[in-house]
Image 1 (cartoon, rainbow, N blue to C red):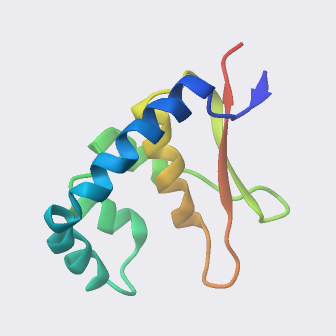
Image 2 (image 1 turned 135 degrees about the horizontal axis):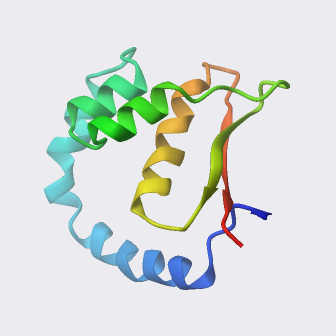
Length: 110
């Protein structure tokens, strides 16, 4: 098993889409304005409110815990790269605190 590293194929796909997202900035403005209005809300609740987590992902993310040193949030088990694990990694940031972030990580299946 290895620590999570985005394979170059995924990095390439992200890079290809990045410019498209930048070109569609006006389309995303209302979304980010609404998101900014949720200041102080729990990240998991915000992701759920915006329908960015499935009920199963919400429950999995709710069960995530910080590592003993408090600096990381390991996703249990091993994973294949894909939308589900990336969504859980994003949701894992909810375990951080202001001024004391916790970085989520996943192990890839070998």
